Every structure is written in structure tokens, then in C-alpha cells.
Image 1: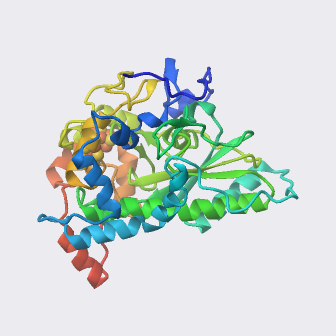
Image 2: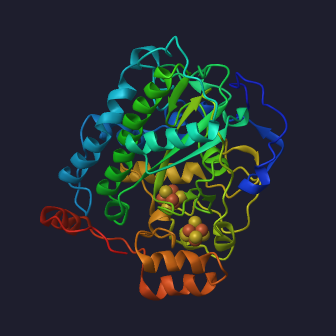
Length: 406
Ligand code: SF4
Ligand code: SF4
């Protein structure tokens, strides 16, 4: 049954002025998302999703890798993937007896209380610049700051023991959200689907935990509140858009000018007075309107080919938002078969490029100026985005060679 019976919060009404600029369109049917409906949680309580394959998927990250024949799924590949997740796992295991998975269904628990003496902030612009510098010092690749927006906070978090809805635990009075982008390794991503590529995901989760815990402590030591958050507590994509880090794409990812879609986001909620960034358009939406490479490449046809709609394929999708929405049930079903995450739709995206190289910066410039159809044809002709084998990844890594020059 598809209900909001697990909503512990009222849905806030109204929208912020920056919605249009950020490419966000909510309708009167919008409701805050109950985290219990997330696919990774439904896989535990929803009998239409839960099965031996889904349990083996989760077990493979902890209990032991299930190696098999086939490029990218050897014991060594799985070992690398699981090791990449290890630091994130340390945090997510800490509160398991209380139904808490830090970073996934609950905030990272504070290491210290805010200092009794509060550092005065008379220049929010300067403080925002400082927080961005410190976030990068602690490992973030890109940083933007958005105003706190209660629409994106979950209607309730999920208890990982009972799978019942709980209060999110977000402290009152938050005014800003510092959004951090963590780059995924380009050579690993080129091997999707594989356990090696899963290491790119695990690495960024572990980096998120490490960066968030340090940045949050810095802010608390200044005497202000700070709550580090990964997949828990609130949606991050709308915040990344509002913070000007990128633009929403057909493959359900945020495409950034620095890393394209090859980036994961985390966030820090705070009441530290900070200047906010504004949304930034790159021409991604116009590009996706004439491109379906991700949709065509998806093995289970989980991505839409038409314009953005309010349609919800199932209860794991947001209610009352006009956007490109994947069928998360089909998508996760494929992950379960693989026993690892899939991001073929990221790998094949023409924006998945190394923008430190000038030809790719020229490509980005052209992509934003109407050469879209020609650029998409070029992708097909050159064969960019094809899967790379994992064995050469290991060989290049042993030789200390760069993994990709594209
Ligand atoms: S992650 Fe894989 S299965 Fe899911 S939408 Fe992308 S290509 Fe399809
Ligand atoms: S593959 Fe094409 S349609 Fe899909 S997200 Fe990338 S640019 Fe957009």
C-alpha cells in the first residue's frame, strides 16, 4: 500500500524563490519523502522487494565477497570494493544496536558539543569562503552553500532494526546547508558494472564520513551547531542544485562543471551565519532533452526517455515533483543480481569527462552553446563511454600509470 502513514513531519508549504533558477518544480501534491520508502530500506521490510538476491547483495559488502567468473567480479575486485567502504562502515556500525546507521538513516553523531563561547560572525561572505576552504582542506572536491529548506528533510527517518519511522533528530534552528561534492575515480567508473567500480562508490562514502566529521567539529568548536549528513536526514540533490554545484540530468544525477556526473554529495546542516550561493545552469537540461544515451544503455530500462513528468513509477519516487525519475525497483533489482552497484548510466554520459584537460573544457563550452546533437553523434562514432575491462585497471595501477586520459 502506498501511503504516507510513516510521515512524522508535516510537509512545509510554499516554495523558495530560487526553485525556477535551480530547475526544481514541485506541485501541490508534493510531500516530504519518508525514508522508509527508500529502495535500500524497502529491501528489508517490503516482501515485494526482499528476497535471497537482495540479502546476498547486502551480505556481500560485509560477510564476504561472492566472487564469480567474469571480468571485474573476482575475489580481489570485491576485496578492493569492500575495503573502500570500510571507513564508512565504521561509522554506520556504531549505533546498530539502537537501530541507528550513521550516515545512512541518522546524522553522524557529534564528537563534541558546540563550544560555550561563540565566535562572532560579522561577515557571512568571508565565513562562507572560510568554510569552503576548510571543507576542501578536509577532502571535499567542490563546495556550495544553500539555505536550509525544510521541504527536503525526510518525513521521518527509518529505524534500521524495526524499519519503523522515527524522528530525524535534526536539531532546530539550522539556517544553512554546506553541500560537499566528492569526485569518483574516473578509471574505476569506466569499468561499471564491476566490483572495482563499486570501490569508487565506497571510496567516496568513506571520504564523506571523514570530511564531514572534521568539518562539523570545526564549526562546533567555533560555538555553532553543525550536523554532518550523508544519505540520512534529507535529500541532497535539491540542495546541490540550490547551492549552485550543478544541474539535474536525465540519469537522475547532478552534473557538475568540475566532474560531470562523477560525483557524490554530502552535507553539513548548521546555524553558523553563512552567505548562500545561487543555482547555476550549465545547459545540461537542454542537452538531456536531445540525448538518451543513459536511457538506451540501462540494461533494465529503468530511466525515462521523454520529458520530465510528475509520474511516480512506485513508492520509492518523490511525490509531487516534475522531473526525470527512474524506476528504482527495476534499478535496484539489477544491483541485486550483480551483487554490486551499477552506474552504467553515469559511465556512458557524455558529461563524464576529465575537465582538467582543455579538449574536454572546449567540449563543455560547445555543449552549453547548442552543438548538442553533433556532440552526441560524435560520442557514438568515437565509442566513448564503452565499458573498460577491470584487469587492465589493475595492470595500470601496478605500473603507476594514469587510468584514463579522456
Ligand atoms: S544504475 Fe544501472 S540499472 Fe540503475 S538506472 Fe543506471 S544504468 Fe539503469
Ligand atoms: S547520458 Fe545524455 S540524457 Fe543521460 S544524463 Fe547524460 S547527457 Fe543527459
